[in-house]
Image (tube, rainbow, N blue to C red; front, side, top):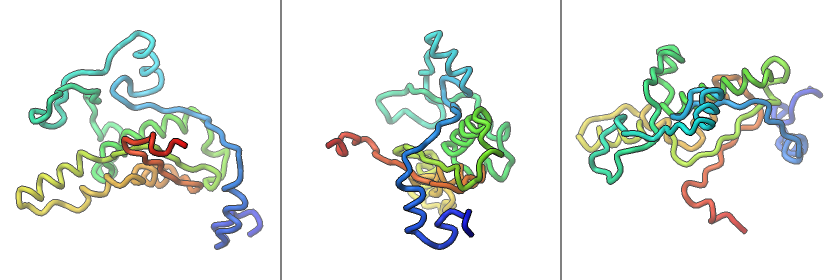
Length: 187
């Protein structure tokens, strides 16, 4: 048990002593999946050539809103990236994060070189899985009984949890959520 992280030995104090006071961190890879590019290369190309990703939003009904434009990922087909089970289980947000995380892990070459307990996930965000949450609300207001899985993706830590499970990352897992008020935390 000497080589196991403290939390596997049942000791929170040992975990804190080993991991929480370490000032070392390594960002070894980057992954991108967004409206401006579906990988690091295409994103960098869009930035360098001034290509805008802003256009009409047609993913959902925008007629009640004053703006009808945004940076929407177009032409996305979940089954090009996931099997049917994972495509149905993961929110659209989780899917995009999983694709980007996969690219980052591939670029880093870290998998296979580190214990899963030495690799973790820390995500920042404010509102994940809102499309499925809105679908749940819409069905509820229409008097239908929506599937509870619609709500799974709206929790702030759901994306980090999905990534840790998908890629077998058993180290630190955290989510930083500031919503729209990051200034609240300034000293």
